[in-house]
Image (spheres, rainbow, N blue to C red):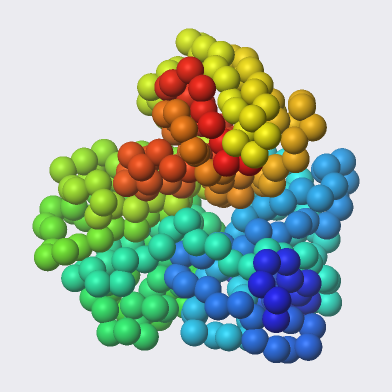
Length: 327
Ligand code: FES
């Protein structure tokens, strides 16, 4: 099957927990799909739904075993503050629905040679972790999981995860009287070449960031679902204008405070790909050929930030007067 844009059919639909449904996708002719690695996600163009903008694109982590060649499985939580994305999936998509999907991409890759994998998942954040656990089990790796949810009934894939045995520790808010999970216990001992992978709501991610502060940054990995406040080198209230130059044509445009590079390009009729517009998906990744970016995305590694060779133009700004973009 040709990479990039795929047309897939929904072959399975299952309620996995309160407000969480899983969807199995296959090629209409049943042929193998492009491969994916644990932590990868699909970019799906959603069906129209009441009042939501058309061609809305959302990203959903693949949660099945990456060795399965003929299917993708995603799970979608029904978000109360949904801008139409999760509602469209829950209300409009059923077995037989056709979806336009981009080949899997991975912003949350699993290091393959860790001595131990410590997974921490909150709510629907279990989805990328699940594909990672499948991989660890298939490759005989040492791993453990702390899975936090508001209640047992809201924990997606509860039975599957419970079946993994002693490597799993659950924390349900209602059963713990609202007391948050004890993260100090998670970080009390550090195994040899241990790597931490965390995905979940903002509060849990921040708590894990704090609890893991003593660890090497490159050994703690996060997958953010929504934009969080960054301690940026240039807070929004103090944003200043800067210039961008397009390497292909030499055209220069001014990016005003409060306007993104992406919006500036759109205003001048320059078409560039985008999806989340929040620095989460990497769709707008653009080569940086000159200047120094103020990276405000959630996907570049520290090494990539230092390299200053690419920039997410939906959120990032400039530390230098001009950025030269490879467009
Ligand atoms: S559009 Fe998603 S990172 Fe820029």
